Picture (cartoon, rainbow, N blue to C red):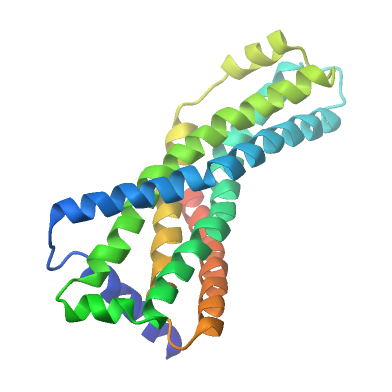
Length: 245
């Protein structure tokens, strides 16, 4: 029964975001603020993870392809497809679930505990629309951009590791990148990025918005938001791969 109660509350929160809109200028300002917080705030960790992710992928792929029959260009193809299909959208979004999800849940939870949300509602402001909707829209704008950046840096990290480690020359790697490229993989990765962005932002907002208690409950809500987001990301990853690939 608790599960159905949570699902029902989540659906009502999503529905409440699209009712009774107020000053659009105020919403635009909040959207820009959240976009900066979510996008620029996660830029550093995404860049670091992406470069090393591609580098490790290149080294491990070269370690497994020990046969002289297999051309060196195959290393670049595997690194490219692995980074685009799985590492950039899924691994990066799991990391962002911890970075962004805990931040959103903690921020809304603190506002709920300190009764700031109640004060907004007394003034007649639709708090679901003003506090939650900009966070979800900002996440769906910035997270796909971060995933695209992760793709580029991941492939560059693989190229850098392969060249510096003497595994594969830069020219051979570049040649392998252009061979058998399927643009559908990029669109599939972006579909996953938008889905995961909605999951991270909405689930974290839900747990933070419905906090009851004090500081201890805020910490528990942040933990629950991250765990639930990661589970749903992996589940959605399987569903999307099953139907779109």
